[in-house]
Length: 162
Image 1: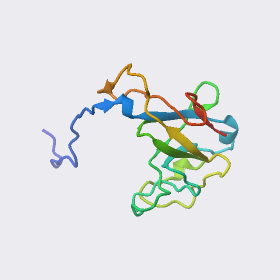
Image 2: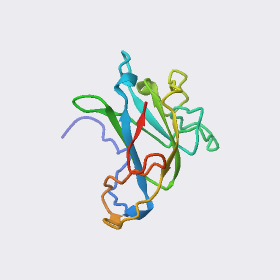
Image 3: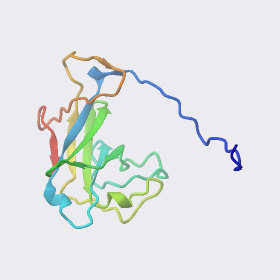
Image 4: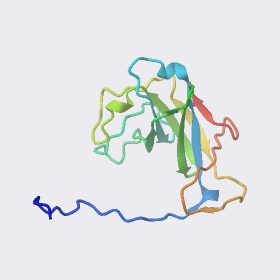
């Protein structure tokens, strides 16, 4: 046997399934314009906020729970063989959302506020409305599949951060 100390696991992960009623959730997906990512050293990130946020902040787990400028999630846009860059946020309850773009996503430490992470004011998109789908094609999902986007300003189309 090995001669090293025996270590107890720090955590034990337990597989779990989640039943999702697809008629009660939607998603936001879109693309980031290649001109936003063209800056040398840009590590793109799209952040999702609940409601209308005009002064977006980076992830900060130490922020007070009353801080409404904290993102719900962030996504690193994926580049296809050619830009644009795509992002997606899934299983969102119906409501209004804001998207914000940064080129400093790699500098975001989720445990603290990072002053180096700046959000360009031009690609902040507010007023994106997610509604649950009205069809009953696949009412329940056990494995989390892609859902549908229904922004109020674009029907069934994706939103684009420009």
